[in-house]
Structure formats: C-alpha cells, structure tokens
Length: 126
Image (tube, rainbow, N blue to C red; front, top):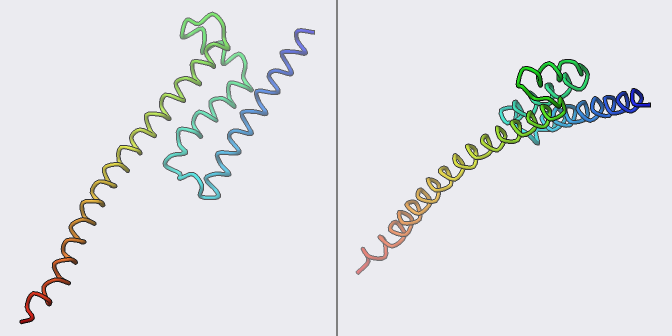
C-alpha cells in the first residue's frame, strides 16, 4: 500500500513539474513572458522534473546537504527558486523605476521647451 502511495505521489510530482515546464514554455512562445525572464523559471522547472523522475537523485542531493528528509530538500530548492526569482524581479523593477524617472524628467524638459517655443512668438509681437 505504501509503495502504491509513493508511486502515485511521484507520478503526481512528475505531472505537476511537466505542466509547470510546459506552461512556462507556452508563456514564452506566446510572448507573454520574455526569454530573459524565463531562464530561472525554466531552470528550476527542469530541476523539479529531474528530481520528480529520479527520486534517488533527490535523496542524494538531500544527503549531500545533510538533510535527513529528502522532500525537505525539494522544499529548500523551491525556496531558493522563489528567492532568486524575487531578486530578478527586484532588479527589473529597479531598472524600470530608474527608466521611469528619466522619462519623466525628459518629458518635463520637453514640455518646458514646448511652452517656451509657443510663448516666444507672442512675446515678439508689439
């Protein structure tokens, strides 16, 4: 009975990992996710597929890290993935914030230049 449960659990993990990987590929294909931002997602998707298929690999990975319970190592990988993706998003948001500030400043300068250009002919008239 326990072997059947473990087999079902492994099968569920494989299906979930493949669905995640397929979803990421589909988002990239439909241009809803840029390739540059998908690299971390794809990397960790592949890692989860590998560990879902190769259970002893997860146990080996857990043993190398000194983790007694192998699924906890998978949880650790998930936390690392989330952490790295959040760092990537923070970098993107910071870059966009800086670009937004520069664009706002440029827009203000252009508005001031336009205001001066439209006011100049009126000032020249007697």
